[in-house]
Image (tube, rainbow, N blue to C red; front, side, top):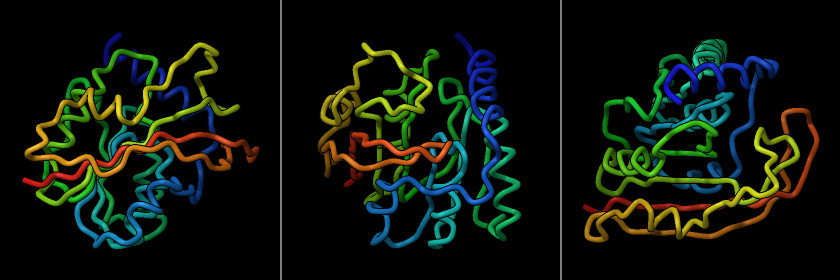
Length: 208
């Protein structure tokens, strides 16, 4: 499937949900970034925009991208409504075809899963290469299926953080794997229901 299929699928997913007025950031982002000095951050798959808004409020300059034009347009409007338009730039990118320009101190990729064709490892490899020395790539994947997930396949397999790191095949002379674990937490879905979920967390730091 190509760009048109991805656009139609994800536009449909976001259009089916009410537009959030102040979406929450992801828990693994806030715990990881809280003590980092603000800089330039790339938010891959910005979705409803909670991460981008939180990062901007912490002083980061945010480039937020998503394949969905609905998500990008909503985040642009939210940034303006919250007085953060000068700190958030939202753009539509299909990461299989294009990648945002720039050098970043942090790249955040939360739940970058799709049922459509995407060479995710290649996109994350490009993300790692866009880091400045000392910058971090934070990849947070699903490690379990939440009741509200678009993917309810009972046979779905979630690669471990170490498998994701190995798949990136980054040169250890230039990138260091800092974290690979699978913490659990209580999550809240778009409809307000809660469930215990597992996150797969990978942090890679560029050292050279």
